Image 1 (cartoon, rainbow, N blue to C red):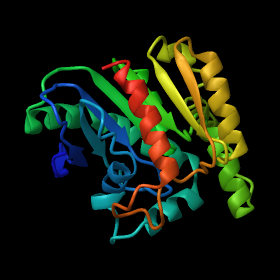
Image 2 (image 1 turned 60 degrees about the horizontal axis):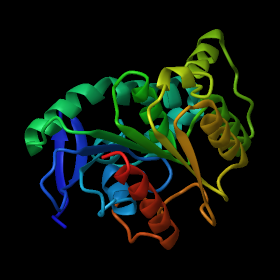
Image 3 (image 1 turned 30 degrees about the horizontal axis):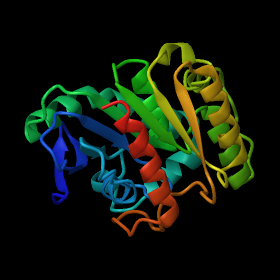
Length: 260
């Protein structure tokens, strides 16, 4: 396998893994906010080395090379201040808005033609994938322990910090706009693999099943012994792949091989 390529496409940092064969197939990904919480760390956790496609792992806003003062503290402060408007909805909007220009730039930089486009996301990165599926034509997608409903994420934040979230009309509308079970019709017939760890948060697992039931071309893959994270803390730098994450990697690779 070729060495990872680090770059920036239209202001978006990425880690690209070149394929072992000549191809214009391209997989794009967005990481989670648990470990692995950067593009480089996500590329190490789920390299998908057996997939005959470029794998370009994009960094989310304020993460990795775009961290404020070199730490995740500013993101944590945002999430505590307003988990909907300053965290979930904001990150998805920014990542989706910057994607078209980043995609065009990365194709140009790496000389990747207009071949099949695949998308992968973990947790919050899964919400980015699902939102993109309502806007962009993608050949197939996979999400892992995905944030499928923002309201589920808010419930989790409430349980962690012990404070009820003060909903407003604006935040309720923003959360409802990121309920992908309700919006399954906009995703349509795109093939989606929904990977769910059987040790993940129960509400995330329930949403995963409901999303698969709501989509016409989706498959649920339940992974034994997988909790929410996919790598060791702190999750900033690349780390050795866990055995359970290797299982996820293999399952996602099988899925995308059907659609490349």
